[in-house]
Image 1 (cartoon, rainbow, N blue to C red):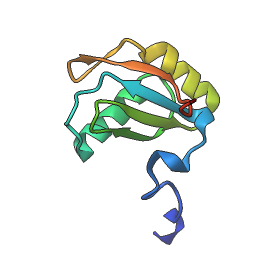
Image 2 (spheres, helix red, strand yellow):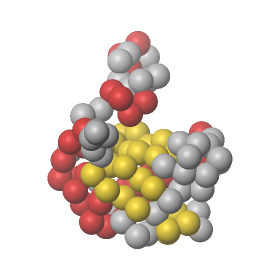
Image 3 (tube, rainbow, N blue to C red):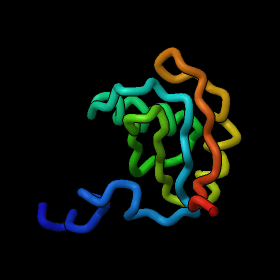
Image 4 (cartoon, one colour):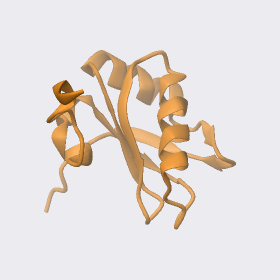
Length: 99
């Protein structure tokens, strides 16, 4: 399938608009794996939206990208304070670091 070129492969979260991304905190630190990313993506989809990409970072923070801004907003409302892999997570809007 050559049609998948440029569809977020390799770019990670940078390839998505900030309007459709969420920041996730409180994830298990030092536990990055493809399986964990898949589990996080599935957890994000329990809010009813289409999660396009989810990633757990080494610091216990992560992010996920949704198809639309509405899905992003719904995910924040539904999943902030939810439990993922035994940890209570924070889900919030994705913001650029302000100085």
